[in-house]
Structures are given as C-alpha cells and as structure tokens.
Length: 160
Image 1: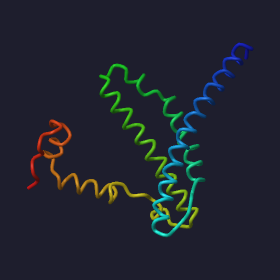
Image 2 (image 1 turned 90 degrees about the vertical axis):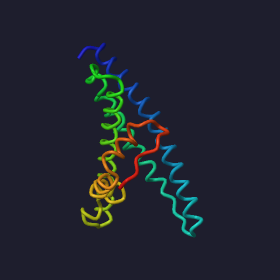
Image 3 (image 1 turned 45 degrees about the vertical axis):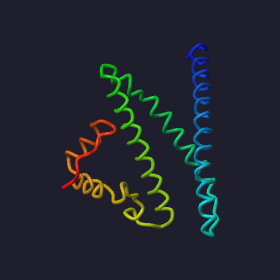
Image 4 (image 1 turned 30 degrees about the horizontal axis):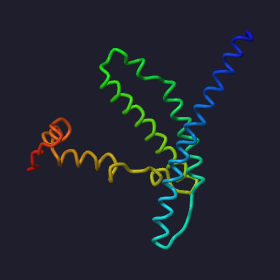
C-alpha cells in the first residue's frame, strides 16, 4: 500500500466518522426527545421511568444502518428509472431495512427478558400481516385506488 493510498483511506475514515457523528447526534436528539415525551406522559399516569439508554443505543444502531444503506446507493443502480420511481424504491428499501432492524431489536429484547421468540415478535398494522390483509379486503380495490391515485380533495367511493 502506498502512502498516498493510506492517506486517502485515512481521509475517508475521517469523513465517515464525521458523517456518522452528525447522524448519531441527530438521531440521539430525536430519540431522546421521544423518550422525554413518553416520560412526561407516564408521569401524568403516576409512573416514572426514563430510558435514555435506549435512545443512545438505538441512535448508535440506526446511525450504522443509515450509513450502510447510503453506501448501497440504490439510486445509482436505478439511474434509468424515472425519479419518482427511484424515490419510491428508496423509500421502500429504507422502510424494509428499518423494519427489519426494529423486529430484530424487539426479538433480542424479548429473548433477554426471557420471552419466547413468538411472543417477542412485534405486530404491524394493529394485527400483523393478517390484519393488514383483512383491512385491505374490507376497504376494497376501488376505494384503495381512489384514495391513493384520485384527486386529493375528491370523495372516495363508499364501501358496500
């Protein structure tokens, strides 16, 4: 390895650490505010517990996840697509990554607490995938299409 390559690598590490620090501080501030909000709400109910450690650990983990997802650079791979589709693809990709990390976090916490794997799995949509499918079927394809693709102020067709 040449001195020039070593200097380039050191510069890259410095840049990555700076970006990581900024992301970490942003996420830690955001998560700490969520924890403080939850603390204020629980104080009104008569209980009091502050979990700033979770905000710190989550900020560290989410910083690493965000940096890894940026390095994948999905937009470069989809450069022939229209921008709206690239934006939607990146949004879906990031959502899947963060949901996966959330599920892993809940499973690890549940297993540490002594719960079974099935009891540790979080549910989404108020009833898991089954609940989402039931709601989608109850609403109907026409109404979903009208809600998602119709004019913003248009009335949606009623369900039967």
